Length: 108
Image 1 (cartoon, rainbow, N blue to C red):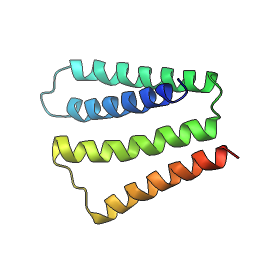
Image 2: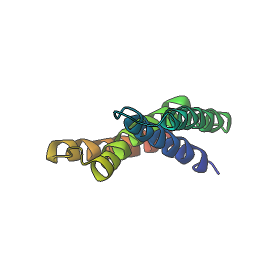
Image 3: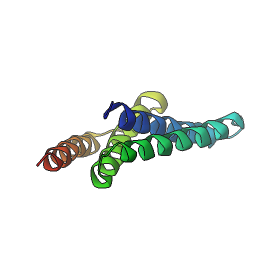
């Protein structure tokens, strides 16, 4: 259960951010803005529940933010054809390494 909540926070935040991209398109439906609000509200709810279940704020926020950045960049490439070059890919790899280091550091 301890990883279900932060994963829910990450996926909700990524979905909200991608909906924000859709909402910013000319002629976009207003429903996209509702999806943005629901997505971020859901993400913060999951994040709060993660903290309530005992994960420290540094670990929870670090994993949430870093994973969100990496997944959003990958999803934006796949869904919207946004650039994802070698330097950006290296950054994603570093983010993954940083998240692992945060988690391993928290275990000690």
